[in-house]
Amino acid sequence: MPEQTNLESSGLSVRSRPKVANFLPILKTIDGLNAVAANVDVDMAMGENWLIREPLVAIWKKVVVEDFDAKDLSYSHGIGGGLPLLSAFSSFFNQFFHSRMQITPEHVTTVAGASTCLDSLLYAVCDEGDSILLPSPFWGGYGAFSKFRADVNIIPTASLPLRTALSSDIVAEVKTSYASAPDPKRIKALLVTNPHNPIGRCYSPSTLRELMAFCQEKGLHYISDEVFAMSAFGGEGDEKFTSALALVDDGEESPIDANRVHVIYSMSKDFGSAGIRMACLVSPRNRHVLEGSMLANYLQTSIFSSIYTTAILTSPSLPSILADLNSQLAKNYALLTQALDQWGIDYLPTHAGFHLFAKLAKNARTWDEEMAFVKQLLHAGVMVAPGKNFGGVDGQIGWVRMSFSIPEKDLRVGLERISETLGLGKIGEEKSVLIYKRQPGCGTHQIPNIRNVYTSRSKKVTPTSPESQNYNWTLTPNSRELIETLLQIMELELSGLDRDGNSTLKEAATYYGQRTVAALQDALRTQREQTLQRLYLEFGDFHTKMADLYGLSNFTANMTDGAHTAHRLAENRLLRKALDASLAIVDRIQSTDDPITQKSLTAKQ
Image (cartoon, rainbow, N blue to C red; front, side):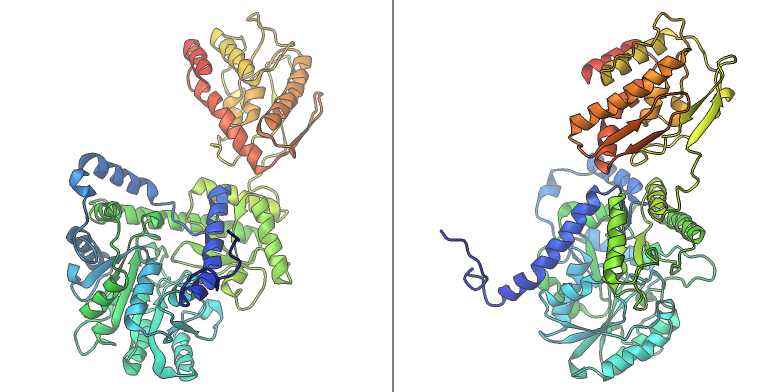
């Protein structure tokens, strides 16, 4: 059968063809970016929240072990979500969003993700070809998800300077965009993101009220995307998050009729759980819109997602978990901005969400040069989002969006890689060669400091002065056993190593950090300088073996022997992962002093 080469001959319906042609490439691009992010050393682009996951996983495991049973494999009950789930969401909004109206389960419906929630809501309140107003800048996904099924157009506002984009000036821009639209009567809603993505700040209550009053005047729905609501970490002087639910009620003083207000929330951002696909729509006074959204997305969310979400939102520890999240966000933000200040890099301060904009590629003059810098960082193992994806910052080239909602240790590694890419060296870099005194009478020797070469997945250990330790300079039976084991793993022949029990041993594992090749090699010391030199050569042989084993043709080890030697290792990210895997064996062996256990572990490996 000949291969089909065009959509017209594929048998697709007329309505499906443009969607496949226009949106499938977008989805494939997103999937490709996700794949890259999953394999990069430090992902500072995707904006996933890793800071809250450990306590949530603990809650989920407890629920699975203690509460999950056979009945939970049946069909779920309830249109738009089961009662336990809807009750959990309604209580959550009452407690943390400070709703002026009591939210009940009847006011909430669940959907598989915030983007699907927006799609369903627009399908319910707009007709094909209608439009919504959207303040600029905005998340790029809005364009695709408003058009994919609902076929709704976006009318953006003129861009204000990003430092003032959330001020009351936005009200005038919204009014201007409405008045200048080709057919204002076909504008059905205003979509507001608060806290804002990608700016990372919150609107003031007064600005929100003005926007609501405009919607009331023009008969528009007010849609509030509040997926970053619990990630507002700012301190004194920063605008606090104010939910739309905290501003409207049934009274005459409400800036808008409550039946025009709809709030979107998701477990993806604040709770770092994008994979469970759980979001909800809150419409306290418009049951018809809720029902229309239910029918537009009639497929129910997974029972596993429902149980997970219910357990999280009803956990007694939830307030402390969210408090810890904000504390960690503030700490990571401070770490990131301190580095940017140190480098003299301009950035836009934030106080909510997971990202900030920084002009890392400050010498870029074209979008291609900006992208080249982003690729340079990617080659160094760090992924950031180019500013072009967001229209630049005030039209300027050279900005990137950086996420800081990752583990602190990964953030530090990312900042070190960025610093090196900028040509600024390592943050807090130690000297390239450490000088220390060995046992009295043995003189001094320079040991190359290659501890920082392999930092991708390594646990750093603060360097400790060797002379401050009480080392046993006699080769003990346990130490001899460790050496034998290392030799077996590395398949090395150290002919200069005296194994008669009278040689001295410099155990530098603590000094260099366990998960470095330096720790393995520099742990083997003898009284003779020739043995140390031979060890350097065998060290190079070991890396060659590793390169051959993992097929890393572009790996090189350039080593020279001698008392004042210097190492330079040119390696790629795959090598770091290969070494991490191979050194896991040594980690296990070094965790015990029992020679029998060491032999057993070696045999099993």
